[in-house]
Image 1: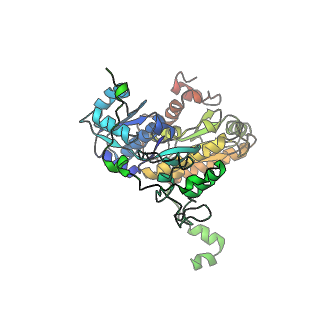
Image 2 (image 1 turned 90 degrees about the vertical axis):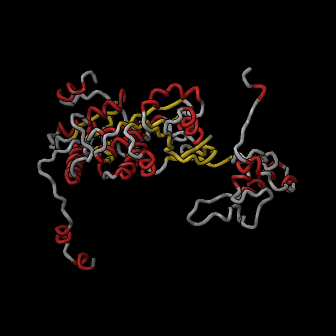
Image 3 (image 1 turned 180 degrees about the vertical axis):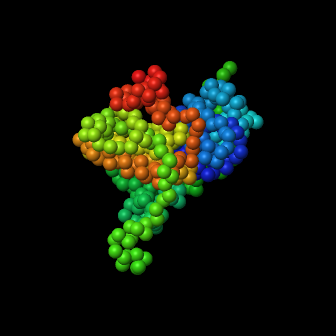
Amino acid sequence: MITAERKPFDEILALVGDKKKVLVAGCDTCVAICLTGGEKEAEILASELRIKAEQEGRAVEVEHTAAIRQCEWEYLDMIAEKVAAADVVLSLACGIGIQSMAEKFAPQIVVPAVNTNMLGMPQEHAVWLERCGACGECVIGETAGICPVVRCSKSLMNGPCGGSHDGLCEVTTPEKEDIECAWALIWDRLKAQGREEMMYINRPPKNWSKSSSGGPRKMVREEAKPV
Amino acid sequence: MAETAAAAPETVEAEAPKKVVDPDFEPEIIVFACHYCAYAAADLAGSMRLQYPSNIRMIKLPCTGKLEVIHLLRAIEAGADGVYAAGCLEGECHYLKGNLWARKRVNHVKELLVELGIEPERVEIFNMSSAMGAKFAEIATDFTQRIKELGPNPVRREGVSPHAAAREALGGVAMPDEAESSAATAEEGSAE
């Protein structure tokens, strides 16, 4: 799922500026599940903004709402009236949702209240780990289901490097939590699967043009397009 | 530093900076009290004829674990000068971990208050059992004093009742107050 973290409050205040009517818009899909931008969090942020305005003696109207999914225009119709009534929309959705809002409701000003950070896997309640880099050319079929693109600090296609010690990556420092060496994990799992030979596949340099380095990507499913 | 350390204990206490307390300031404090412990402790304090400040207004909950960040924040937004949750002793929650969840949420609200430039000490959580009537009264007294020293909540809203706002935010979660004054009941209208 897509995960995001709320921006520092001061940054949010700066983005809202001196606008008088603020709509805090949550999204009830990915960001709600990662406890950052659902309706509950939108309500909390709206309350914070009202408290701040009241403290500073500024007359600001702050409302909150949530779309089921900000990234799909059909769901945005449901909040269109509230968006139209606002001077600025503060969106707690991921970058996709925020841009959908900005595009659908242009020229309405839509600003982000979160930093979208990764495609993460919930490890336990309230903990997410990066698991996919959306690189456009998945290799985990050869790497025992472990992604070297995001789990190896160097995104090595032929690891491990000399910085792998006792299963840990050299990026691990006393201050930082342990980072497992992706290639050590890959080796252990390939061994458990009896597929050690896959470790010796020589992978050519990765074609990053299929990732975001190749410019904005577009996906079309012709067979599914409306006739 | 060395001088202070060498001084007699009473001198050290006398040197502690004393906050100027406005004698006319009567804070409004919202208490989210668990039905199984703090609410019963308050009843006991009453039966024991223990004095505690009338500044506190109670809202009864089935468990402090039902308390969410927004409930505490709403009370502050509505102008409550102080807010605290009063739950069971740790390890003795009727629902096992409700009070531990509440502590985490209270701590999160403290962080939010820091972001807002409001003293985090305005929000707190205390633990007690239903047999601790004296402790209930003591906490109510100490917390009221703490808020008197902090002064009024910088967010003041004319004509808004923090108690009613907190109750409204809680919706059906808040339980009816048998011990509340009839004035409070009239204020909330159909809350019962």
